[in-house]
Amino acid sequence: MIFVTGGAGFIGSNFVLHRLARFDEPIVVIDKLTYAGNRENLASAQHDPRLIFSHTDICDGAAIAALFAAHRPRAIVHFAAESHVDRSILGPGEFIRTNVNGSFELLEAARKYWQELAAEARAGFRFLHVSTDEVYGSLGPDDAPFSETTAYAPNSPYSASKAASDHLVRAYHHTYGLPVLTTNCSNNYGPFQFPEKLIPLILQNALDGKPLPIYGDGLNVRDWLFVLDHCRAIERVLETGRPGEVYNVGGKNEIRNIDVVTVLCAILDELRPRAEGRYADLITYVKDRPGHDRRYAIDPSKIERELDWRPEETFETGIRATVAWYLDNRGWVDRVRDGSYRDWIDRQYGERT
Ligand code: NAD
Ligand code: DAU
Image (cartoon, rainbow, N blue to C red; front, side):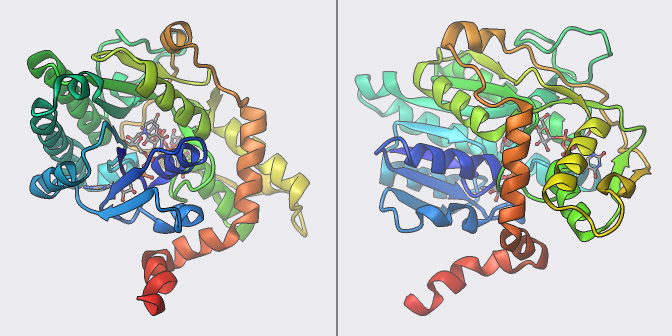
């Protein structure tokens, strides 16, 4: 049995579904169901007895300790976080609470549980912390990509809160010997991404005929990775990573924002042409994000070399699959946008219980 925090969010739900399709091992999803948590993401596994859902805030240390005692997991994969940079600029408090205090509560509960385990279970236990490349700050055009030894230089409240959690995770290994693993990944895209992030937001605005907002000059660079490649990397680190180690995960797909949006417009022109004009006509430059990091790029050579992980999707294949998913799942997007995803579980089960 493993715990997955944040398993109703974008990457967490992809990870849970991917894992249930491949392994018999049960999973307890621990999720507070913030605005970003959507139980509908796990709908395809709703009748699977291996999936247990716990509606729990990771900041609630007593509740987390009770879950450890009840389920006795062999590992925990920690995705739960406030994850949107723009929201962290508008309201940093929740980012400190969940990303720093919540990670601390989780580490404390894990440490106490792990210290009581018998020797073999203790040796096999893992705490995998899912983090981000944003902790390394911003690169200049000619700088080498981020490696595991790049100095931390977070620039937003979001990345600062993730950096703080990374440091706590490291300290729990160094001080107590807790068998932790940390992954720092670049920008993900794919199914179930909440439509406030660049790619799903652009797709929805385009289909609605609304402006496609590009921050600043549109020349900021992100290193894009298809979400299932990230999930496969996490799985590889969980099973074969060395405790105490950090692994950077990225797809070597550095692309400027304006080019990402142009590609999305071209695919939509092909698959769902507008009655008049082209989708790129909707591109609109808007005021920049404060403190906007210019460039992220990951050097994934350590995880490639040590754990033999490589992405299976190119940006071309992954982005096409993503556009197709959003076109085929307009209902999912509509329920997110009108808020009805919040009561999906009531509608699903209300009359049955
Ligand atoms: P998301 O915002 O889509 O999902 C976050 C999930 O965490 C939601 O289900 C939410 O309900 C849950 N959550 C939030 N606060 C909680 C709390 N206090 N207790 C319990 N659950 C809580 O995020 P995502 O994009 O899937 O990112 C998942 C993780 O991966 C995050 O830690 C993020 O920092 C990291 N990451 C994301 C990306 C990316 O491109 N999205 C890249 C690298 C790393
Ligand atoms: O690098 C990993 C990070 O990637 C993760 O840690 C974060 O959780 C995840 O949200 C993502 O952060 P970004 O800030 O890079 O993602 P976002 O989708 O918000 O923005 C991607 C780029 O597009 C960024 O340069 C800002 C720009 N942008 C974004 C939005 C929402 C726009 O130009 N217009 C927009 O409307």
